Image 1 (spheres, rainbow over the protein chains, first blue to last red):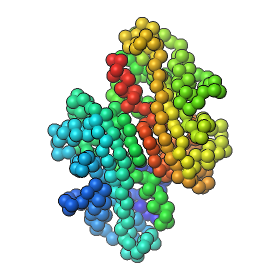
Image 2 (spheres, rainbow over the protein chains, first blue to last red):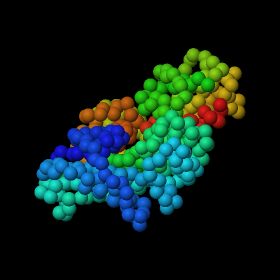
Image 3 (tube, helix red, strand yellow):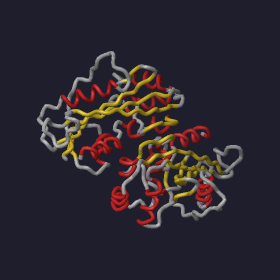
Length: 195
Length: 195
């Protein structure tokens, strides 16, 4: 089985590397807009499938393409990547003192003639939910984090494995790796199941 | 405030570095035996205090020494560091398919004339609990992990941030960082409270 990770996220790369199966990474440019009626976990499923379809090179019979998408969901509203520093501070003020959901969806794509096709489908997706609780953050803490760590590439304007995660997160229910953007245990289980 | 981390664990060092407060590390050799009547979280509290007391250099008024200890607790029994590979495999077979507790205790020690003394005590400790669930692990997975990662320096014979954590842990309740051996959010909060 030859794995292709369709993501340049260093966190996803590091987690996939941790399961000791070789892979290569490719950069996939996909439109990340989605139908407005989608809710919560449906959104990253849709976007991860868009990313999988946006890979235009034909897949070989022994190749499996993996794409993923992560969103932050707070009180029925999606927080994506912040537009700028002010938007990042706004998002962190929303998250402060509350529990929110992180959904990461993973899509596996194989070729129509793949050895690894399951139930005759070229795409297989799942979504994983974790609940993350921030204590009340001060304006100083929020400003310091945004200025120092520039979380503009991160859904919800934070990285759990950065300063703000260390000082502000009081609890997680579910998978920590899911919050990092890649529910690696479920990825491994799925790959074993099609091997 | 000058912090001294009394631990050479790379994981504790990395987590403490993440809160952006400078510190130095020292190696403390302490006896890790404990009274047999101690249970669960009482054990790492006792051992982290032994470590703090085993630091013999006098502390300056602006110094805070931090020590920590982590244990794995399964069905009323403590799992410490494995003696050898066979003992590591035995521990992982015990943990397989079950939920266990990880307790990390942190002790802060200051000098009798410290600026940071709270309630007139030279030692302050807390303990933090997380529940970790492993799916059923196969003998092949256990053997591969022990052979490849040699977890002989780890309580319960596993590192959550290693292969076995990636492929085998289905859920954590509580702090992931606590399972890594250092509940960094609570360390930060305590340091802020005495500053």
